[in-house]
Amino acid sequence: MGSVRVRSETKKLFFDFRFQGQRCREHTLLDDNKTNRRKMQQVMDRINAEIKLGTFIYKHYFPDSPNASKFDEDRNKERYDQFSDQTPSFEEFASSWFDENIVRWKRSYVENVEHIISHHLNGAFGNKKVSYITKADILQFRASLAKVKNGTKVGLSADRINHIMTIARMILTDAADRFDFNNPYQNIKALKVKKADVEPFSLDDVNLILSQCDEDFRDYYLIRFFTGMRTGEVDGLKWKYVDFNNRLILIRETIVNGREETGKTIESAREIQMSSPVYEAFLRQKEKTAKGVFVFVNAKGNPLDHRNLTKRVWYPLLEKCGLTKRVPYQTRHTAATLWLAAGESPEWIARQMGHTSTKMLFQVYSRYVPNLTRQDGSAFENLLNSRLMNPTQGGAL
Image (cartoon, rainbow, N blue to C red; front, top):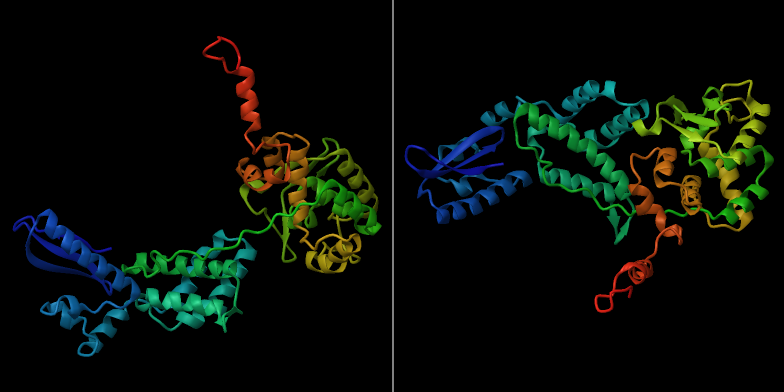
């Protein structure tokens, strides 16, 4: 970001900023005082904004400056190209950036980043020098991902667009730092994403689902409902992580796109206590699959394919029960709300869920538990009536 500075020897103000990777200083005859600084800062703010947008034309602000001709593309195209060649194309830099960072990513994330770069970013910026990419280019690319046609959105979701733009931001920020040019991604905010609905099942709903479920999958869904395990955690659960002696489920691995990986976060590695129904469900399942590695398997002995199971078993089951169609992940929300409704310690619930704190419990789940909190002020009024002393009579109000 450019700034307004003062020369120590003359006490005159000057502009100091970077443009096209080069430092530019434009001196004035203005004295260093509050009024002049304010006026120059207004100009500096406009220059900063235009540089970010890629619309800054040097001679419009400093027509008599030697820099005006130096940055004139028409008269100095050769010199400009020589400067730009100092930075690689977006595709070249993205490739090296990807190779440098791959060691710290999970395989599923590696595939996601690779797909974003090859299918989206290279198509938009691939041949451009990283130092030539402007804020306008970035915003235009983001708009193309949304694809609004005749007032109707036909492109990607806001959440997916944000994921794509996050990779673009990471690449351009790193490039700007390495090659010393103004990062065009500054001050671009993420799109607002509609908050995902939390629709847990009631205990009556759970009983109905389990009563109507095929026997082959009844214990699978029972365990999901009463442990709060994520889909990848339950599908990737191995028998070596089921501790019958201490009645614990050790969450150590997960299944993502059919491959074994570590948990979603550091806190995902946790121990879940088994309730009696869960313990008995594992005992029944042990008779079926204990000779294999995984607790729940398909006919070929491989871990379950959650997409196939959702379409073939879960959605038809909800329809059979006359319940609103909901994704299987709502079983995790169900466990949280049932624990809260039962009066379990929020700290204990957070540990079972693999959360770092209880914040999410109270933000997301408390509204599904009417007796957990009061929202009409009556609890506070009752406290005052029972404990507050009457100042006139010396007794309780």
